[in-house]
Length: 260
Image (cartoon, rainbow, N blue to C red; front, side, top):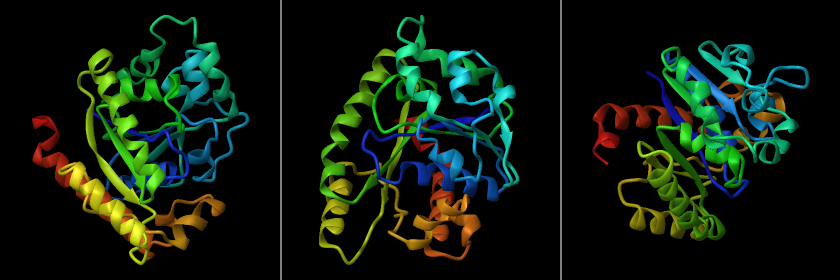
């Protein structure tokens, strides 16, 4: 049975898509069957894997045209990693779904028949709390929150956690907070260190030990249409995402999320 992970943060530019792409790649690298779903109209997860989806079946078609997952799945050049691409059509989905019954559960119903095929489904959500992000959270078993180590990112964390709590109560009682991933970390920056300490103090037990550093190889990899693990496997960024994948697996095996 697949573990469905929503990568969520209503603030843009915090490393959400980078985390989705590279965590998915790291899971595939250790032999897991992984589906990455791009649910962001900017489609950066799609282009970050070197795929351009103008003529392809996309996540928009799943939500609006009721296409099946098998019609939209693309096998990437990374063994074990499949993709549901996105394109700008998704930007209109918020409006097109307004009158649809149980619109917040469409993705859940779409994924349900295919959960035995994959070990992990990773959903890259848009930087907003609209119907697309709601679908991702209703379909998910848990949420990973990439958090940039800066003041404004920390300011929005309480709002995001409140949204997750409401979704747990109203739509998806099985939804867990898998954890917070500190991203774009610069140990030379006093603000980064302050934010890290504040988050660990207030969210004890929910912050991953692995910290994703600010790293040029992570930044430049999307321009080559590759995850950083493929672009430069020995880089600090690659090592960080492999470490994150291993830490996630250790937490999963420990059953920590079943206790919360």
